[in-house]
Every structure is written in structure tokens, then in C-alpha cells.
Length: 239
Picture 1 (cartoon, helix red, strand yellow):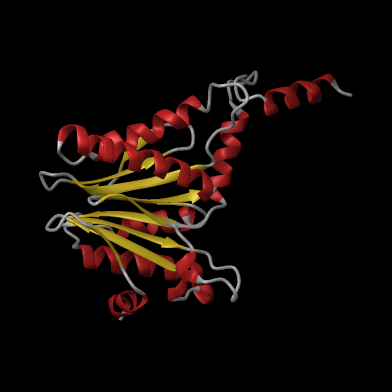
Picture 2: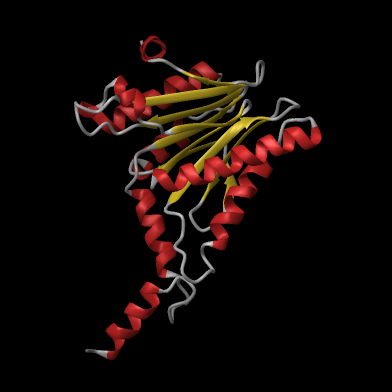
């Protein structure tokens, strides 16, 4: 067998080994997995944060309500993911526990950045430990701090995070992001953010769009409470 092919296979299979051109190929595969996942949109509005997600119902026999693509981390923090959702559930379970421990220890709500760092610390460990693979998932984490500040973060599969005003991950990223940049306004309300998220998802899915596919949640800075919208709520917003 050609030596170059053998060498490439070695770099390809080991998460702890850099290729000659300085790449961790398993991390790049994890990023490709995210790009093949269902679309998720996060929008930081003037009065809260919005998450709108495609649940990708692949069969008429599936129960849409049983498909979980948005997660409550704490009363004031929500998250969604694109990629391997089972990986996301492991991270959500970990951060839910972290949030509960913080509440018991300090008698206060955990800040959103601490949740994001908890997610990214575990993701990063899996890019440097033999016998592990990277988490094949990107997550949007958003919420409202105790002082009313609205925050939205994107976490990458390899443990890096960024704060965004609005972000999209998954298969619709390349098509939706330019529209999001064009239509986003920092003065948007939660209702306007939800309408924009539904509009962008509808434009991407086209004939495949229906409200059974949409999962939408928000946290506003008045109640600071994670709220999930029903199909009827979504239909009213889309009118």
C-alpha cells in the first residue's frame, strides 16, 4: 500500500495526532457532522433570547412532540443543538447538574458564561485524549442574566465558544446566515425574533415546512423563564 495513504489513515484515526499540515482530522469530521444536522437559529433580542429549530420529522409515523431539540438548562437558560443530538443530551445533563449545584451552593442563578465554559471544557478534553472522539455537535446557549442582560453563545465541537447577536447552525447555515445578517436588528422584540426565525426556517425548508417540524422557545428579561411555544402559538406568530 502507498506509504502516503497509510500515513493519512493514521492521522485520520487518531484524535491526538496532528497531520503534517497542522490539522486534527477527527475534529474536522465533527464539524462536518454539525453541517449535516438540522437547522437551529438563535436570536438575542432587546427583551430576551429566542431559539427556533427544525425538528426534522422524517416519517409520518413519528410523534413530533417527542422529538427534543431544545433543552432547558435552568429557568433562565435554554439551549439547542445541531449534529449528534445524543451528544448534546450528555452536555445538557452535565450543565443542568452544574446549574443545580450552583443554586444550592450560592443561592443564586448560574451565569450563562459558566454554563458555556462547562460545555466547552468537556468538548476540549475530547480533542486531546486518546480513546475518545470529539463531540459531534454544536450548541446554541442563550438566556437572560439576573441583571437582565440577554446573552447568546455558540459552542463549537472542539471547545471554542463565541458570543453572538444572532447565529445559525446546521444544514441551513450557508443559506440562512446572509439573510440573518441582513434582517437582524438589535431593537427586535422577542415576538419579532420568533417571527424572523420562523420566516427564515420556512424559506429554507420551502415545501417541506410545516409547524410540526418547528421547535421554538424563548427566555424574556421580564420573567426570566424558559418558555416553549405550542403549534397554535407558532401559527399565530406566523400570520
